Structures are given as C-alpha cells and as structure tokens.
Image 1: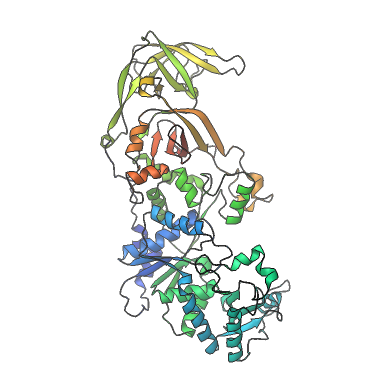
Image 2: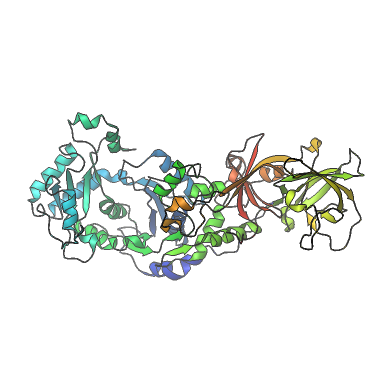
Length: 599
C-alpha cells in the first residue's frame, strides 16, 4: 500500500503568527543573563492524567518555542508528594511524545529543593516572610485574616507577622528539622495586605508534610507515606507551595515566557513580587484562555467517581476525554493538534461542544486513512447458482486517492452483509436489499437479487438470505460485503465497540441532580460478532495511519494498536484497541462518518 502524507489542511503555525501569541512575541522579555532565545516550559502536576484541555497548553508552550527557534522544558511541578505517583510522571511524558513534541530537557521542581530552601531563608532575612505557629492562630483564623469566613470580615495582620527575623529563621529551620507536624506551622510571605489582589495577602510559602520527629503514633500510619517524595524520599519534611516554587524555578531555568491560563492572571502580581523581592531574574508571565469541553466532565474527582461506580472502565476508557482515553479511542495526534490550532489563542475561555470536536477529527481522517469493509451485524447471503468452490479475487482501492493503492479480496458464493442493509419488505425510502429487488456488491461485476430468506422462530431475526446473481442495471445502489472464504481466512472476526456520548445532556457538571444522574446507559454498544475484510492485514502492516510526526512507524506502531486506523466504508472510522490479541480483534469507533443528529 502506498503511503500518504496528506492531512487536514490546517495551518499549524497560524496561532503563533496571529492574535494573542503574536502580541506576546512582540513584547520584549527582560531576558535572563546570557539567554538569547525563547525558553518556555510545560509544568504539569504529576497527580493525575492530562485531559483535552491540557493539549492546548502543550501545543502553546512547545509550539511557541519551536516556532521562534527556541526550546521548551518539561518540568514536573512535584511539590505535593501526597498526591504524586510514578504512573502520572510516565503517562505525561508518553502523551507529550505521542503529540510529537520532545522537551529539550526533563526537569522537576524537586531538582531545586535545596536552592528553594536557601531562597526561603533569604526571603526571611529580607523581611519578606515570617513563621506562623498554627497553635495560635489556627488555619481558620488565617482565612479570617485574609478576609474569609461567613461574615467576610475585613483583612487584618497575623499576630506573627512582625516577629523578629532571626526568630522566624530559627523556627523555619526547626520546621525542616522535624519540630512541627502537618498543620502546626507555616512560612508565609510578607506581602501587601492593602492590595485588592488576594494573591498579595500573605500567601503560604512552605508547609509541613511529614509528621514531626518522635511522633511514632503518626509515623506508623498510612498517612505518613504522604511525606515520602517520589524522588527525594524522606529528606524533606517541609515542601514549598506552587506560589513560592513556580516563579522561582522559572527564574532558575531562565524561562523567557511563562505562558499559563487566565486562572493565574492574578498570580502574576505575586509572581513578580517574589522575584523582585529576592532580586532574581524575573520571567515574563502572560495568560491565555483555557480550553473547556461541554457535554462531558474533566475533573479528576468526577472521573474517579465514574470509575468507582462502574460507568467507565478506567482513565483510558474511550468515552472519557483524558488524553490517554482519546489516544486509545484512536484520535490521531495530528488531528488533535490541528483542532487546537484551529481554535486560535486569546484571553477568553474557549468552550467547545463534542460535535465540533468530532467534526474536526472526522475532517482530518477523511483524506488520511485507508478504507476497509466492516460488517457490524452480519447476515449470510447464499448466492444460488454459483458453484460451491467459486472464487473470484476482486480489486478494491484503499481510498479515492490512488496513492493509497488497492488490495484484492475474495468473492465467493456466500457473502455477509450488514443486517441494516436488508428489509423483509420493500419500501420507497429503502434502496438496499429486499426480496425481489437487486443491489450491487461493491466492486463485484454483477448485482444480486434477494429471492427468499429464513428467520429464527424465537427471536424473529433474519438468519439467512438466498439471492441470485443478476444482470447490472442503471442506477444500482451498492453495499459493502465480506465473503466466507476459509482458504483466505475470510472474514476476520472482531468485537466492535461503538462509543456514544457518556452523558445525556450538554452540561453534566451543573446538572441539579448531579452529573452521575445523567450518565448515558447506552454510552457503549458492543457488536461481538462483527466482521472485517482481509485488507486489515495490510492496513496493520503499514500503520500508523495517518502518517503523523507524533507516531513512530514499523515496530513501534505494532506496540501501539491505536495507530491502526481506517474508515469502515459506510459505517464509521475505527482503530485497533489494545485488548486485541493474535486471535481476537477488538475495534473502537473513533467517530461516525457524519454527525449523528441524535447526539
């Protein structure tokens, strides 16, 4: 089969030349000493699987740097050991590679724990931070100090705010030495309580995670594992917060453009304040609107509820919109990036419906994957008059595009057609096979005419159709088919999973009865007796389809079944699922051939 490098004709660089990102590039960052190129970073928290919204952040950070000849780091923001697991580190790295991006370096916030600790001591010395013992005030009182609580009280200073610098410094060192347990001490930044920006109301810089030394009652409990860091073990009893870590690690890595979503827009003030207070290089933070998707849920907590209640199998269930689920469903990385790029970038939040997302994927697949015949619900058709050993090899193109080449499939006296292509009685609105009428079999020289059929007495379903080879007529309609030919191991039997919307409404997140109340009971339909023609072997051999930069060919494609994509003619787009084995084929529907009006 010939390869095709054609793809949906979207300009992947458009969003970097126009709009928000073009304006950002026209601004001149201060620049770290000796840095003469753009440096960005993608900084995920390794506490869960990335979802569709993260693909925008990945595309922006890696793409912006690449477009301007710069570099991008993958930096794990690993400052909360209680929620971080190795599987998340691995999954994030794999998804970035799958999307076709390679970080210049993989770094971790934990790489800088020693330097961050020293910067925290320096901040105390500059009268920019103070130690709070949470016996008095309590955490609830700190919320009140920040103007919180039911009464929305005015802000007021913590009683420890003006404690002597040396005392705060000594107590901060005692925090790390194990004097305090969780929720017993904090290091807070000494910012500006008069500011209207909540990000300047004395944010927390460090908190205690591990139990205090000598507290054996807590060290023996499962909770004590919360302080064991994936990379640094139990070296650190205290951990920096995001607000303290992010800007300083950006500074240490020489990031020129700290690009993040608008939820961090208010944080820009505290970001700049901390860098300036410590007199370190200050990167340029700019914020863009995040990408949301209607008709589903993206929060980790809600997805976990779906898994625990048996509505989906796991985080990579194709009905979800985590990136590992979209990959398993068969969404090509190039199609995903084309979709994101086509949305553009601005300060406004972009909320997209599932229909629009699927239409973008459909357009990408239409010209970039081969075509095969798939029968979801087969009925055998015996063509009377053909010999029992009749065999004719029929040539069928893989696509309308001749570059894809063609394959030969066997045609015999017994073929399978889809149950949807036969009716027991003729009607004016049905143009396929009925008794006494003829229909063409794709690329077979002559049409067939149904002469009789048999039914199961219990189910009432048609179990067998008899037909005859007929003379061709003008205006003949054609249907797909698969022959029964043991010598060519035809058909290939498969289990096909059709994935429908997971929810029955467009806004499950805000449904008054809760999102679990609107889970679609028919979100997955399985056709266990489906059939695929033998051209599937060639499609598997020449995968991945499409020929995307984000996926490796040959041996690697065999390890990633989702790369085996094709159009099931007149049915849908499909990919191979990882549940497939040598003797058992499982297919996932990627998207339908056209928008389903019932969605």
